Image (cartoon, helix red, strand yellow):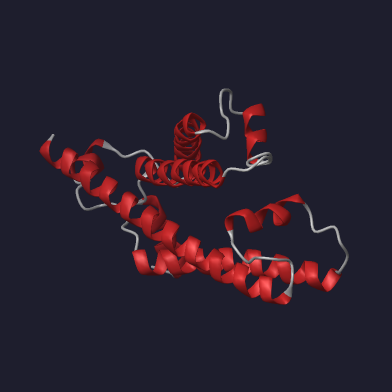
Length: 195
């Protein structure tokens, strides 16, 4: 079997429900932590930018209740995207009976390192591009990034610090996604084997 066929076969074995749960938990947890951070930090203008989510997430606010509601919204949206984006194909009755140990497992080290590296390249590269471009207008996103990344600025040092923060965050999220995905797949396969 050639490399493209091997990748296709492996991707067919990904579990859509597990992808949905993993992405839902990561997005929900991310929105909860971002909101809780701003609530705990406090201040006159705390959360003005994140509070704009209330325009698309009814009832959301930068409060403890909003953090809980944001976690719920994040899970639902992440679950939907995970289910939608996960590769899958219908199983025949014969394939369904042999489904145990059929699904792909994620390697937590590889997954987390790759996600961390991608986020580090994204934030570090964007910051470096803005430093090279120069000027005072760095955009709203990067102005607000310093709220969550202490010491971050749009500078060469900020690009390096931002890349380190992004790598650490991506590594943690990758580990969490791999753990949740693998645990969900194991539970699903055990349920099929019992049933």
